[in-house]
Image (cartoon, rainbow, N blue to C red; front, side, top):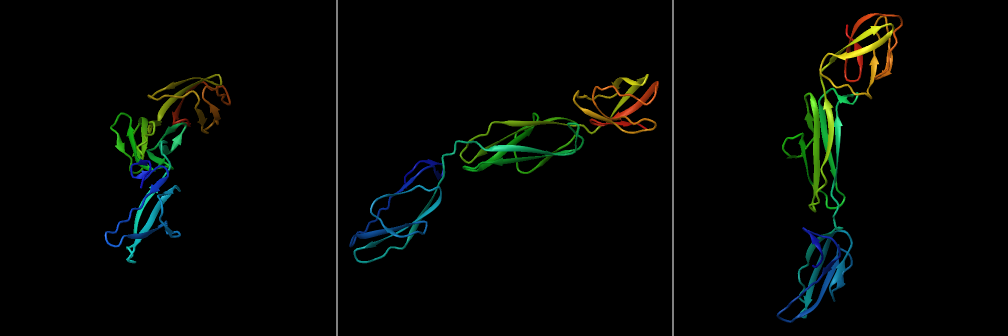
Length: 242
C-alpha cells in the first residue's frame, strides 16, 4: 500500500498493489474485494480514496486450480489534520456578584473532529502542569488562574488558554454613616475589594427598607436619621448586622 501517512493513518488516497507468486504451475489469476464488496479480478494496482477504515480481501489461483486461502489487509484514511483541538473550561460553584462564595469545581472538555484528542494539560496559578483526568475542585480564599491546553493524535498543540476567578468565603463588615437622610460615606472595616460596577441590595430592617441600588448611588432614608448603623457586606449584597 502506498500513500501519504501521518502516524498509522493515511491522509489521502491509498494505492493497493497485489503480488502473487507460484513456483510450480504458475499464477493463473488473483481476485480481490474492498470492504466485502463485489469481487474483481486483479489486473493493475487500484486506488481506495474514501475516508474511514478499509479492509481489502484477496486470494490467488494457480494454473493447477489450487486456490489460496483468503487473506486481508486493513488501513484507515483520514483527512490531513493540521487543526489543534479546542478545549473549554466550565466552573461550577455558588457565584454572587462576580465572586464565588463556595468551592469551585473545574471541568475541562476537549474536542477534535479530525484525529481525536490525545490528552489535556492544566495547572493552577504557578503550580506544575499535570494531565487532566477528571473534574477537580479548587477551594480556599484567593484569586485563581486555571491554565489549560490539549494535544490531538496528530500532535497538533492547542494554544494555551486561561480562566480567572475569585473565591472569598469571608464576610466583610461595613459601617454606614447617616446624616440628614443620606448615606454620606461607607468605610470598609475588613480587607476586601469592592468593584464599582457591583449591584448591592440593602435588605429590610426596622424601620427602614432601602430596596436595591447600584454601587455609588446615594440612598435616602425615610426620615432625618443621624447616627451610625452597621451593615454586613456579603459579596455584592448588603445585610443589616443585627
